[in-house]
Image (cartoon, rainbow, N blue to C red; front, top):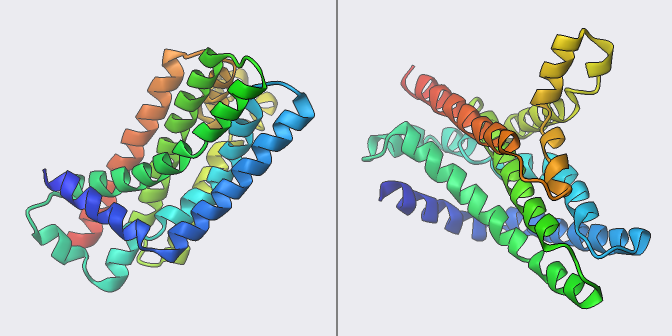
Length: 235
């Protein structure tokens, strides 16, 4: 109950923030550009190009969105006060994550307009569209967890944002050198690539391994955030 109350409070705070609306406006503008561009270039009634390009925008949108989640509490000196309420660190982290995820899911609801457009233009493959939405949502959740962890290790929102961007960029390009290293290490690097696990979803394949990877990334980085906040707050 406490988690949902705090999550709603955080979401309301987001919706009252000019920065959140600016980010959403940029997100919507890029979404419209990528969708129309993909349709014009490929001539196909699908959203593969849209999701492939929107995945890249997460590198910039997520750090800006998550940098305030805990760093702001530290800067304002409200961190200890928040944790003296009947809330555990895990509940606070979960609530903040759910609020950020809810905001991004609300943003993705707008993209359903593109699905309606596709249904008018042709006969889209609904299986591919469903799989693409699922994969993108999982990727988005994993990126938000990374951003929340980055926010938990600094009292500076700027540092938190840059740290989140750096971590996400590393997880984006980690497999680029996979062909230049020993096979075993190359396989590990490929397995850690965030966008690498999205490809099959964009092809319409819902693979359990990819779902497990993204969910594991979410829990792993949220766990790190909990540990970081606990050590910083009570040190």
